Every structure is written in structure tokens, then in C-alpha cells.
Length: 346
Ligand SMILES: Nc1nc2c(ncn2[C@@H]2O[C@H](COP(=O)(O)OP(=O)(O)OP(=O)(O)O)[C@@H](O)[C@H]2O)c(=O)[nH]1
Ligand SMILES: [Mg+2]
Image 1: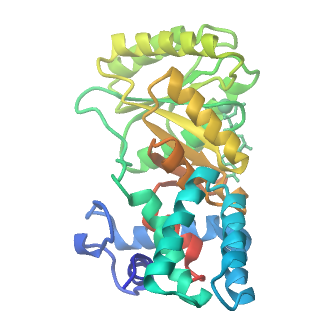
Image 2: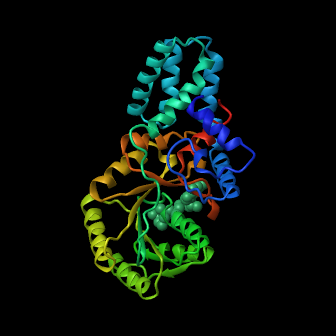
């Protein structure tokens, strides 16, 4: 049985999915409630609807329109995958492996290739090493998560959603408004703190972001917060400025909470495709990005950007945004993602 078939069996089973044996790859939190897991799978299915109707349905058409696996089939497949934001380089490697398998296994019927295509796409992600996708929490003292990324990608919204998730887990959460640059940004974060029922710390627009972070962290330590989420400004006016500002913030954070920030999460908008990949490469050069949050996956019909990130940036995607409500942010899970994309295809 292929990899995808195993995933499909796993998620389509009626009964509980809660034991360690029931995973196809990687480590899974065995404490996860089966009901919660089913709910999460549903969020993936719903959030990836556009991609299923877009890129995946093109793949299905391809199989129908070709009676044999030949050069014109390969050309069209290659084009579909590139259009799906998987990335040219990644697609080239994929095509080489696929041609190899077709030759070795003597495959001539396109319908026999469906499952192999999905398995090979899956392998791109899990190939050499499975990237650690869990958030690293501090053992004592506050865990500090810093959010960075260009304008409008969804930083503030993501913080609001993560705050809600953490609060539901029983953590005491503080949001710190270090985006003092954009008008209304502080207020927007404050509103999210209300929606998610967590605390907020901010000062007026124009204050030095590092000074806000300093005071916010003093408060977090005094009042024994478990997690501090820091919102930053999205401008990338030039690399040197941004680098200096991030260095200054990191210095302040590290002085107040040794070992922090525990994560620096880069937020990327999935609908921006290759542009998002370039942002990741730029940010990776100027600061230590420990994870990516990929937002607005519900808004793209392409859906392949997760694979491009893995192959071209090699930073783990830790969370994905699949909609605008508090519950639409999910911890990234490659099995649920692949299932959500291809459940009707194979
Ligand atoms: N559909 C969808 N919309 C999202 C998602 N995440 C964020 N958004 C929307 O994207 C828009 C921008 O989000 P913000 O959180 O303000 O982005 P930001 O990065 O903080 O922006 P700046 O503060 O201007 O840099 C808002 O309208 C959000 O509702 C998502 O996962 N799916
Ligand atoms: Mg913002």
C-alpha cells in the first residue's frame, strides 16, 4: 500500500484515531483527543477546498485527457505543478524521479500514476529529515514568540488566533504590541486580545518597539505569564534597517529572558506564491527564523507552496491559516495537509 492510501485509511476511519501506531510518519501527540483530531481534519478539508478545485482538479483532468504516459503527458504535468506554486526547482527534481519510476515500473496508464504522484509529492516533504514542527516552549519563565513578516501577511491575526489556542490549553498569555509604526496597529492587536480573552500590553504609536518589548517583558515576568506573543511592524524598507531593528529587539528580549525568543516565526501569505518564498529567503539571511506560519491557504487555488518552502527554504512550517476565524489556525501537519488536498483524487 502506498503512503497516501495509508493516510486516507487513517483519516477516513470512523473510529478513534488516537494511538501512536496510527500515524504514517513522524511523532504524534498521543494525548490528542480523537474528536479534536477529526475536527482538525475537517478544518484542513474545508480550508483546502480552493486548491482541490484548482490545482488538484487539473491533475485529475490530466489523467482523463491522456490515454498513455508520454512526453505530452509529462509536459502538461510539469506545467500544472509549476502553476501550483511548488517551485520550478522542486518540480524538476520531482519530474526526474517520476520519469525514473515510470521507466523502472513500466507504467503506461496515466490512472496508475495518480497515487504515485501524490506519494512522490509527499516524499518531497518527508524525505531526508522530518522538520520539527512543534513550538519550543521554555521550561521555566515566559516563553517568548516573536512574529515577523512583511505588510499585510497576517501577523496580527495569527497572533490573535494562536493566543486563543494557547488560552484554551490553559496558558496565561500576554500580547505585546511592538508594531508601533502603522497607524491602528496597536489598537488592532488590543482588539484581538479581547476576542481571544488574553492580556495586552502596548503604548502609543511611534514609541520605540524595543522599549515596548522591554516593558512588556518586565510585566510578563512580574505577573508570571506563560507565553508572550510579540507583534512587529511589517515594513521591509531596507534590509540593513530591518536587520538592525531585529537585532535590537533580540538583544532586549535575550537580556530580560535568557534563551528567548524561543521562536521567531516568519509569517508568509500563501496567496503570494514565489514572492513569499523570496521573503523567506531574505528574512532567513538577516535573522534566525525558527518557523514559518503560512496564512491564507484557504485563499489560494494553488496549494503547493508548502512543498516549495520545504525544498527551497528548509524552515519548518509550524502553523497554517485556513480562514479568518479564531479556529482556522492549525498546527501544520503534513499528513492532514496531503489528505486535505488529495482526498478525492486517489
Ligand atoms: N482568508 C484568510 N485571511 C486571513 C488569514 N490570516 C489573515 N487573514 C486576513 O489578512 C488580512 C491582514 O491581516 P493582518 O493580521 O492585519 O496582517 P499583518 O501582517 O498584521 O499586517 P500589517 O500589520 O499591516 O503588517 C486581514 O484581513 C486578515 O483577516 C487566513 O489564514 N485566511
Ligand atoms: Mg499587523
